[in-house]
Length: 217
Ligand SMILES: Cc1cc2nc3c(=O)[nH]c(=O)nc-3n(C[C@H](O)[C@H](O)[C@H](O)COP(=O)(O)O)c2cc1C
Image (cartoon, protein in one colour):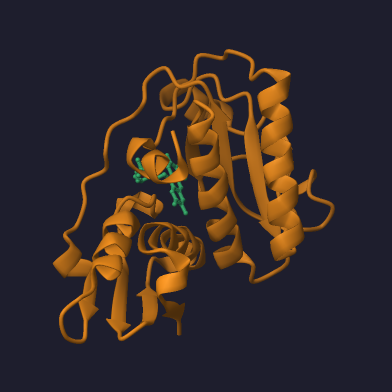
């Protein structure tokens, strides 16, 4: 499975089998974390065999077997970058046969904060072997979230199709993407999750459209 296929296969999974992630896969995930941190100046950290990410009450009703997770952290205002790099990690994990779940609200924020040496966590991403593969989220249409000045080129259409596959908080898809020639802009309004959503959607758009075909403005 490549990263593009992973966009279609990835869905939120909140219940995991508890199966340990093999050491060679953990190594690959850690390498990907390192690359993202180096390229974007973040403080993402992968925690394995650690059951403390999800508070007990949520574990009882919603989540099962969350034993591994990425802490998505950076300096103040790094929300969009965390979303962007989070998308990379979620899709990369999917290509390795794993499932994921972005948790921006219902996680143990204090516990995460103690592990990030002062960097600010904006959420965690649970990762592991899902009890199921999840189901596709309810989606808006391309017309509802995008516009292009004139006839939209294929790369723009492909980008929007990919953007609609991105996870967003509460599955709101509260973004609009506009294109003129090879210039593309995005606006998003999803309250405290606006920055993270923007990064997740941008990563997906780039993967679908092809980075060389356009520039963000
Ligand atoms: C920024 C952000 C925050 C989220 N916070 C939570 C959360 O606190 N609890 C939860 O159960 N799911 C949370 N989710 C998961 C979303 O509900 C899920 O990604 C969305 O419904 C879309 O489904 P999909 O991931 O299958 O595409 C969050 C997702 C994002 C992107």
